[in-house]
Image (cartoon, rainbow, N blue to C red; front, side, top):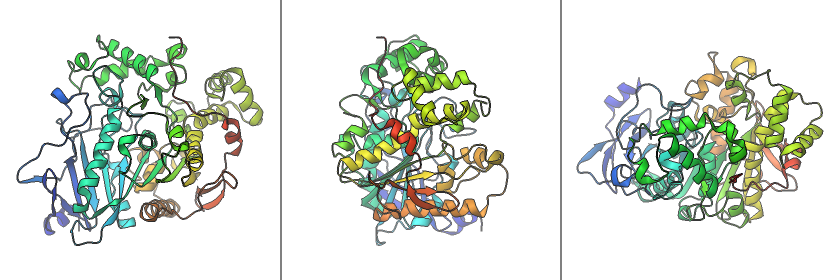
Length: 515
């Protein structure tokens, strides 16, 4: 029976939320609701402001289509082809085995997408949560949040970190409404990858998010959090691209669907401003959460070490060859020169400059330029921030479980390795969607891949239900982590050499240089 036939024969489920009733659909044993507003459209007088409550509606609202993506520049994982249009960017989607109020309440998992804080859409096919909902017999929620200039530019007349505030509002919606969908508001796990993991880490430090979730999964946490000074300087440069001042009033004169062009224009020029923007310049994204002292008072590492996450159970990890995805996309696989490796080591190595280069060359004496180039950027951007989050959690009296994905993506005879983003198609089982189409290629998905995918879903959903993914909690003596490979095993953290290189680095907010 096809999904369409199933929809026709099964009665459509109707659930009443605080703002009004919604009608979803039944799809292969699940009740699915798409495009439910959790906040009012952030346009007009509400543009660049904190999210407002959704506008109530009369009657039953059809919840059978994803809401429109937030305005954003084009990108590999950004919306492609025909997508919904309109201003209702702030919506959630729900997959539930049973929305009946009489059912025993199930654990809830809330997904936050990545995309360098400048692209992303919860309606992307790669985030289809049906397999997770079935595997764990739980409720899965995915959400939209403002990205790019709308969500993260540090401008006058607007609160900082509007994208994070959107995520908090979505979690408040979950707290207030998820019981009607069969979920347990007391067992909420927030999970995300890349910028989504950076958001999860930030939410652990955001005072207004406390109490909205009891567990968190952070997959490949980027270490880039901006100082207020750096964020304001970048915002001024973005506004200048549009011939405007960095104020909410000025930027609101430009259609939100046209404004991303200014951010994209700056992104193409950022690499030339290392003198002013330092390590963020080569990343070509002028957006990240801002340590503004209010919405985000301190970095996640500082907050967790001080005990902010003591009551939240944490699962965190990374992939073995994170940066190889970006090397491949730039056409540099096997082509990195000694000069390029030297530049990367001096830019991103701990301590920077010649000291950073010497440290890596001494620690990895057999490594060629390609490996050094990839390793230092994997370590700086994802590996060490992810590990440090677990260590900060433990230092603050909390519990953390750590993993490393080492199974190589099958496309191009394994050339991608266990690169950035591979965990998404494995976790969601969406091998042919979005990045999965690139990393799995056209070959048949093997039983080995399906077994690893099933193992990951089992671990993530077990963690959401009980706080235990199936392997020991991390400590700074044994440093045991789960290795995700064709034969999963628990052993000491594999990147020990890199860990020692970075053990004295505390990942402070990225500063503005040469001001």
